[in-house]
Length: 168
Image 1 (cartoon, rainbow, N blue to C red):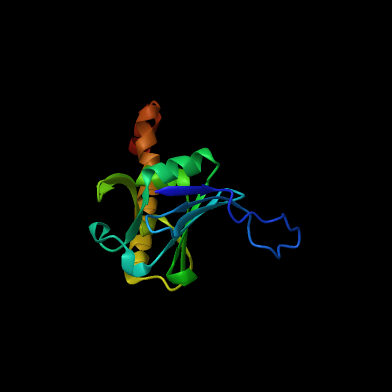
Image 2 (cartoon, rainbow, N blue to C red):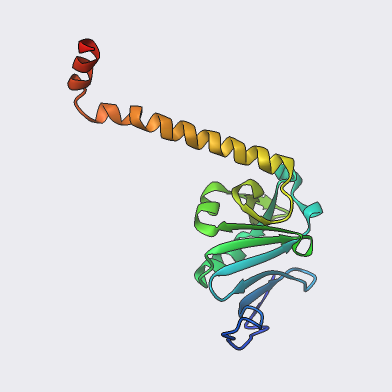
């Protein structure tokens, strides 16, 4: 992969008329820009929804580990995947996203496999699998929060709790 630094720099514009300032761009094998880091820590990846990875059940994309590592060193905080020219926009904070993702070797290159269910869909119509994944996530969070009180009980002396149980 080729990397170009400092292309497309724009003057800071307080009115917000000019595009975001580009800090760094990464290009693919054919010279097409695949990843752009903007000022403010926004890392933007352009993709097509038909190019979602089959190994992820057509529900995710992959980004080269070297690109992510370099972007993190340059201050990237948020990853935004724009599919189909911006028809779908997926956004996630990088640190928690990478904690939920795994590294796979695709075509001999180490890449982060990123499931779109870990992103927030900010533009576009949510696919059925995304709605189902969000519902499962809410159920799991409810179970976690409901079980939290029971898990803390052994941390304290439970003799008062047992006494109350028998006195009632």
